[in-house]
Length: 102
Image (tube, rainbow, N blue to C red; front, top):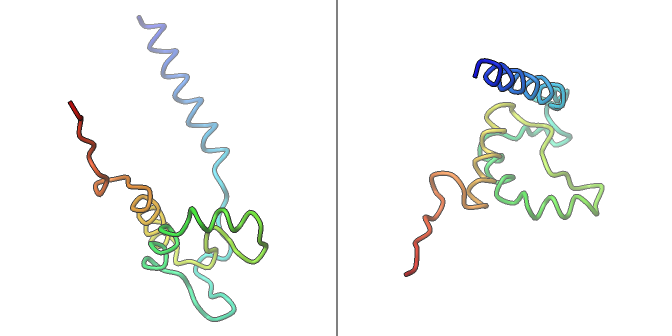
């Protein structure tokens, strides 16, 4: 039993170390204005999250469109982006509960 517990703990630590090493680095353009003098904040993050599936597909074929705004306000933009993407995909507390049909 002890050996199994130690194996699980070791596996969890290994997964944490590997996931930390694969995480993207800092955004050097965060909290800096773009050419128009704008910095994307929370509300723009929600909008970008809502349109993220369409933007992702367009970004594969266009060099002018990016999936994620690099000139953003940091944590609030990230929160808005995840919230918007979750709303679009029907996740979170706003998700529709499925009903079983008998």
